[in-house]
Image (cartoon, rainbow, N blue to C red; front, side):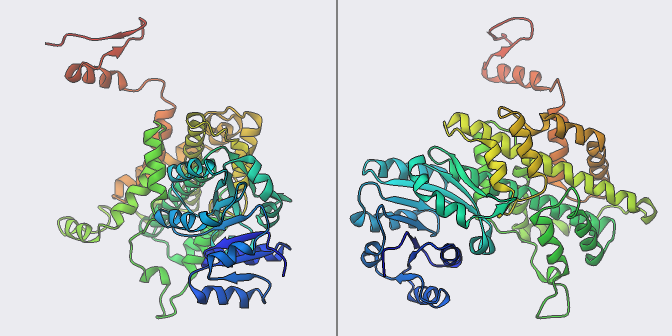
Length: 471
């Protein structure tokens, strides 16, 4: 057997399925995993077309030059361990590709360390889960463009396609690929929390059962809210538990786990002073959901559930439209916050991220793919320097003509009245209200800081900074 075009380390769910995807497109693959059962499984599933190894040396010798090695291993120290094991066998010009959810700072460090050895290190954001890996993921590439060119033909072949365009592209220098994937996950957190709060309102306030909610969501998924996350939510709401005769949703603990990428996005937004309150709210609500015993203890001191009811006559089909529009605007704001963070990070870290390419890559294969991303792509095509999506004339016109802000405000008023937690929706409303305010009370905050810390302040009528002797 000849040399393989690419090697994959880590033959778990993602690595194995991507290897099979690569084979389907006519490229040769070598796989490596310390778990012999995974090595055997790939050989069997690929009908012996893939070369599989449990020895690093044999794996390395099976690859053509320059060696291209993609790994799907847990983020953190495991990635460093893999690199250390490979180093004795690598040569100048070889290419390592990290396809996991590594923190972008770690990717930058690895790139610098390996550059001294003339070894390329690519940070590749990968979205789409198991199905995406097998049938076409969304891929976000960061690092040296020369290295990307060695990989382009393969990556374009295996990626998802939308209207014939591959959902893969070069995001920029350094850790741009992993940074874009991190923000993708932050947006994912926000949208998931919004859909969850929307379901909660429909169920507990509108008193709709899961069948009616799934039907409603299914209709929405064919309109403005067409997206992968809406589609899978419909399936989830209809899934029955195989251990009982109940819906699976009713048997699942209300604790949302997380791997940290959403929190990284929030931390980065705070660090770069980019407001991303919906993403922050989503992370906070996941944290709050994990405080099960505390929530139970506190609930004993208050009437459990909603603080008041609204008569059923208040709601009808028209309010379902209000709910849809509130969700739509909140999702728009979530995308706007994510893209604003990417814009600022690109300037701060010299990534040179093309935001139109980001929208193009996210239209297919990834978890946050949606119909609206085509409009986002159009916004950045028209104005590559657009600082916030809410300033795009077409998006602004749609918000105005459909009165999306009025619907969001209406939804939030009802949620507050009945005591339903809707942190992400309320964050969306406050974000857009603050964004459209020419004047905020930050002048008072400036003077408070000057009063207790002599931090000085700026005036509207004079240049420079000033300090007042308060006492």
